[in-house]
Length: 274
Length: 339
Image 1 (tube, chains in turn purple, cyan):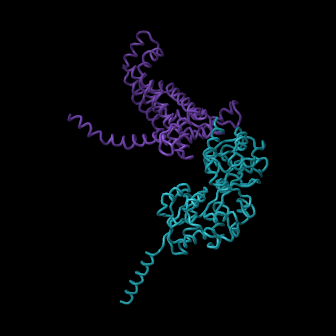
Image 2 (cartoon, helix red, strand yellow; image 1 turned 60 degrees about the vertical axis):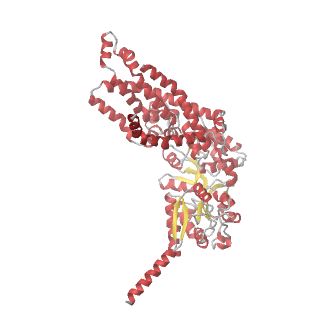
Image 3 (cartoon, chains in turn blue, brown; image 1 turned 90 degrees about the vertical axis):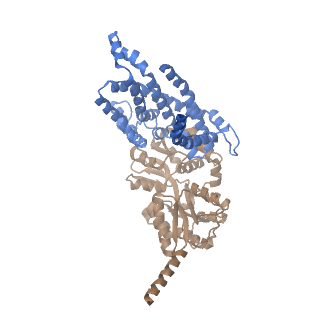
């Protein structure tokens, strides 16, 4: 009994913060999406979104880009995390610094960097022009490629660090045993390391997917007005056209959409643990 | 002794005067504009009239929201609007009407600047017109009309502004109008502007206009005259020209708030904002057009703003009607431009 009371006492500040700072405002916003101007319950805002191909297109772009970003983070993050885990502690430290250092810079500043690199006459279009692939005025700005590049850079550390934590705990002797039993290096990676690293990959994917589905600064700066994503659309409804009900309804859809996609995925993680 | 009494009496009198010094509360819009507003209007007025002016930084829409909230106990004496909010505020009885004969400068205002006074709105003290910004070193020929945007000579070097930006909205309404559309029928504009999309960069905010002229080889953009000046100041060879079909404009109004004491002084402040000297100084510093016909601009400044007889070509879309169609229009626009 005492320990329960002690637990409660310790957790009160956190619970209060969670309640007042998160639960109450978020519930308020979600309820707003189901209210009409007079305060009655209505699904009209949700239906406006769900029956309009334009908004469904925005939702699809959001999901599609988030999936691509997550996939790229996995493919590039797993090998890096493996090298970090198996390298010397000194190398690991330096790599961790390299990966987390960009987190110290504001996302907006990093995005402006991408604008310089991807814009007309920027490093990449210039190089492509010199190779003869594109004409002089070619720009990667305001393309989905630009959004993906900018977002992968922002979210990559989350993936690597999630996987690193898991790979570090894998017993190195398992790998050695696999090699002794006749596995090549790559086979050992595929048959031993990868399955054991799944929980880290799943945790990282959940983080990266949810963050990229709800980001709006990077997509709006790199994608521009013509490639709207859901978070950007919510922002516009809330601040530009002042349609708070509709903005809240879009938030409900974003939240439910992410949950529907992620819950089965998170289940996978539990199964691979057990 | 006498000297001390004298000094004490003087101090008492001075502190009495201090206590009685009236305060006017006004809003301004922050940034370089507010700085200039203080320097050209508020500070000289304080000195000349022994009054304290409290400036609150508040955009037009927020100012209207506050006026509504404070209806029973208003806190502002003079409010400035740029988004047509005065039409709504006057209709809701939040403003006190000012008669033209109460302002010494009213007789010199262009008719459009005092039209609203009959409806209980404040006079227009400054205007920024939306026309065509172009890079004079790059364009094959200088544009003269809104329809020039559809001239293929400008290739894919156009900038269009998203309608969630008020300059973008007004520019679009003008394009819609030159192709036969109205506030209630934006179809001609949407169709015509839709045809420009493959030749344009669509931007959201003012700094992007400058960025596109500087880095992305933009040649031509519908935007505001004061911003053309800002870009030119940054070193780009960008000029402003009014489209010959007319210039939609943003109207800055100075309005008297209802149910406040010191209305005589507040009217004097509004009158001061209408004076030719103040308006000429705003044109010189930031390229806003004067609404006082007596405001004299040197030729180099006059050529960069809508000035003189040209003010008769200013186009104003009814703010109340626009307010009704705005969100629907923005949604149609978003659907049009989304890839």
